[in-house]
Image (cartoon, rainbow, N blue to C red):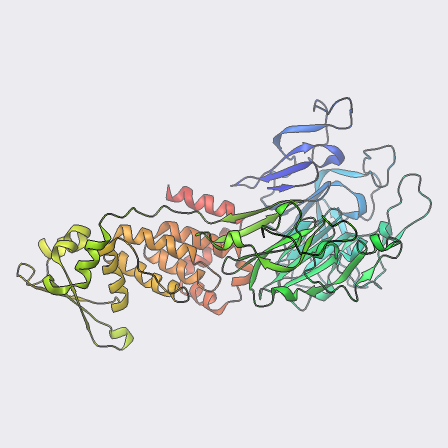
Length: 589
């Protein structure tokens, strides 16, 4: 889903149809005919659609992503095309010529709008190397000075009156209003600029400049961008290496730095000391130093605050601290903008404490005007304890009455076999697998004698000890956080081999909490081989969400090479993570 100023869009699963509802001003709902729609009070122009309805024209495309600006929309199709509709103000639809468009008000200029979704083509003229955008009735592609034809758009983001588009190769295009450097272009790059002349206005001002033609952001070209986000007047871009670049208006510390020396300023706006701070901006994408050491996989811009998610699920926040939107609690002592002491802000990224203690990994965040939202992986309910821990611990650590000896081979780790003592009664009570082995037709030689010796292969001795700890206590031992993923993967394999279904479910929960960019592929591989379907679905959702970061990871590439099924699923299911998870759960059901 995506929300604009007074309207919303939703993307359906399956074919990818687009639904719209809310205010119908400036054609944002994609309906050419507004006859019969209700309107607010006595204002006939305040027409609205109260229930979600399909946006005409989008049903013939398979839409993968939707984005809303103040009063315009962009969507991305599976073929990499971009559809645009709504208000044409400040060139946000990529239209150089707005002649022939209907007008919402009495004037044509800034009230012109495009009522129907129209494909926008990105082209760079070969003769002049000047980018331009034209509306095309047929399928369009993105070509940059003869670049490969598969350089298609993968993601779009909308600000109030500007847009960013990211290609599959990690390049970023921008267009729309030039105000406060939101397009990330050099200040001396004046070609292609247009003025938005307001009704009755005769004098032009710089803040009405806009660029209707998508233009490559030069400062980001040395980097492979994995995700972009737009605020009302600022932007964030996340690279494939987890760095974050910020540019645009510096109000309330949204650029992540206390130092504003060297920032540009709109002199016409900065007429007083009180308004000077509101006019400062950074026109060039600049590395956000406050996130150094944090491998960011997703960032989200609100109007005056930002959120970022790291590869280990940590969430950081900075910008305006009003209304508790940063989730940091006490804000006394923070700086404030201008003369308004209530307009406090956090200039440097800080960890959101309330999300660092939850037992589910944060996979994505969203920032509104005055609030924030985090999406977590599903939290599974662990099996309840079924045996008194004190009795079980006593039996486990006292081998006096043990009548089963496991000889665990550590051949893969180069160690000698390890002897582990246990009790028949406990093994048979807690495990159907061991019950069959000790009493049924599958019992080892000597299973009917007073003492039994069983050889265990393909399971490390430390992993087998963890399995026995669970058999005796119904709990997993405390595992060091730094080694937990590797150990839990080994225990998952062991629980699958020994058919310990409750242990297998418990390990899935803990592994889901440790999902990160460095282990997601290995976790998926293990879950897939162990038929751990819930964990497999969670790992696949994580991989799909952060594919832009993972695709350059050698370990991930190795897993894909060894598992053609994973590579095939990624190629055929490159849809939104939410849709993929729903499809996966449907298959499980």
